[in-house]
Image (cartoon, rainbow, N blue to C red; front, side, top):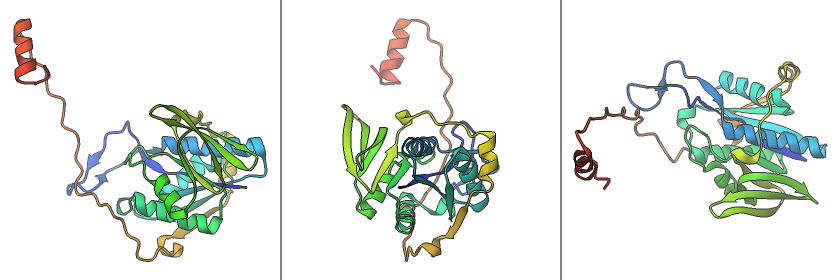
Length: 252
């Protein structure tokens, strides 16, 4: 069995970003981390491999060669994933649809039995790639997974829905997107970090995948920082407070 997992780097949600002059992207020294949901996907693949054995795990990252390779090795291979794949692309020039098409082409080459993705990236928060990928491949899917099990040749997924939990049985190959409550990602050990340096990492350009004329369908028109919080005002009494809440704030 083979499992393909996502290994996406994202800008640190806790870092302060600087927007470029044209408002199209961020500039300066950006702090990156592994996408939190991808960490859950990687942990899920590793747990299935440890529980059932004879499972090859492969991590796929898309982006700048140096930084993407670093996160594939440190975030996936050092944790125990068997090998990695990097597809070189300018991150500001790809969208969820193009990423899904890239995964579909890699899946055609790798022929995995199971693809586990983070349900979304914490920078764009689009929550689209898993669903689009399943459509392009024509595979069954289970999103927002909080539990994944292999039973009798099928994948049993407990997924979180608005009304509670839903349990699905999927035939393979299939696509799963991981939620944060799926597991607690492990830390990379020192031995794992040393081994990761020697694990294979294949490199591809977009042209190598045969995407044809596929182009992003979404472009960034403008980015901007949120407006600062306005200072509060002092009121003399309850009557003035009620008047401001009803007249100015219009919350009453």
